Image (cartoon, rainbow, N blue to C red; front, side, top):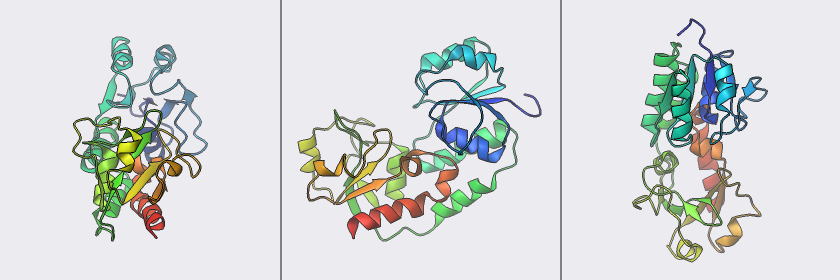
Length: 242
C-alpha cells in the first residue's frame, strides 16, 4: 500500500471514521455517507448496490466494507477485479473498537485517533440510572426488532436498557405488532434508521408506552459518533421516561 493510500468506503460509519482520522485518504463513498458534513468524494452508489466499475476506476488501495451492511457478491466482484477489501464484523462495542484499530492503525498505518480513545473513555464510565426493559423496532411493514447479538443491543445494555428480544434465535426477527405491544416492555426505543421513525410515525403504534426517539447514528454507527453516543442516547431515554 502506498504512503498515502486511496480508500473507498462502503459503510457510512467507517467513512466518517476514516475522513475524521485522515482527511484526504477517501476517494469514494456511498450515497448514504453523509458524515462528516461537506465530504467531497466520488459517490459510488448505495451500500447494497455499489457501482463496481466506478470503484475500480478510482484505483483504491483499499475498499472498506462490513459483513452485515454490504452484499457478499459485491465484495467478491471487487476482489475479482484485483482490489484489496477489508471487511469488518461488529456485533458489540468491544469488537467495534478492535475493528476500528484494525482498519485505522493496522491497515491504514495511522496514528491511533484521539477520538477513538475518547470513545473508549466515554463508554468506560459508570452506568446511568436506567433499569428498564424495551423493544427496539428497526422496521415496520413488517415490524422487525433488534434480536440477539447486535451492536445496538450491546450499547443499550450498557446503558441499563434490556431489550426483550435479546435472546431470540434471529438477530432481526419479525414480530407481530400485537405481540410487541403485549410483551410487557417499559419502553419502546425508535431509531431514525434504517427505518426513519419520527414523532408522527412509530409512537402511535405503542399507546401508553413511553417512546424514546433516538439517533440511529448514535445507536448503530461505530465511529466518531461513539464519543457522544452514551450522553445522547441516555438523554433521549431519560426524556421518554420522565
